[in-house]
Length: 324
Image (tube, rainbow, N blue to C red; front, side, top):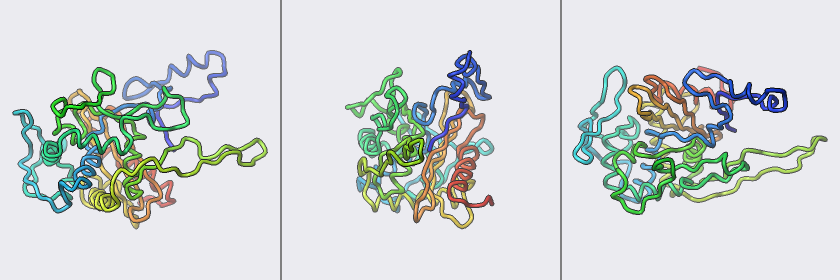
């Protein structure tokens, strides 16, 4: 299922001045755009949720293992300039020192992923992004214009580089550069990891029912592609669980259920205003739900504080778990 807010009542379309009333919908964070399905059309910088793709490329290619070690001084140097860790609004950029890959993912260390991106190269990272469905419109039962492709964008157009020098590998690795994604695409990444590395076709409609109540059409699971090896998916799952148990995503934790997740806090170009993300699946050892939450234009809106609690509520509702 998908949801986009602010929404509108489609029945208004059939009423007098209904369309005009829909366009008058208000929103607290900016233009309401109620007719835009943000889940399938909205394009946002993914921030650190994209580290799931970078980590997939790093592990699946054999270039790194969960035990690979790094030194984090609080920044990496890219094109002669320092790229700092995100830190948090209270303490500023953090420096973790000597860490392994799991810890780098758990605490979402930009400096480490910057170095990983430079060592992998941007084309390798984008190769794995395409395995998860990037650079193609998702095969939904929707008109073409209601489905956006995720990937690098240049001047409003999808940009598929063939020269590594055309892309900043460090910033790409932690979801900045010119990367734009739909919430659906990041949900597909989370679901692909949950599904042992196999990405499944998404559907809008589960079944079509006749006026008499009989089922006319029922959709069935269909495989799109294998993005990563099962052992890579298993390693990534453990890393995502670590995010929730003791990293940046603790506010998504649910008593008695192992949750796998990854936070994201993407820059918007406005100082201290961010796009807050959380991608997730649960239970981690037997997944029943996977998804992505994105909240636009939030002042000091770090993903772990803003989006993770919303994801928790979604998981609790679907899994039938009481609040804790």
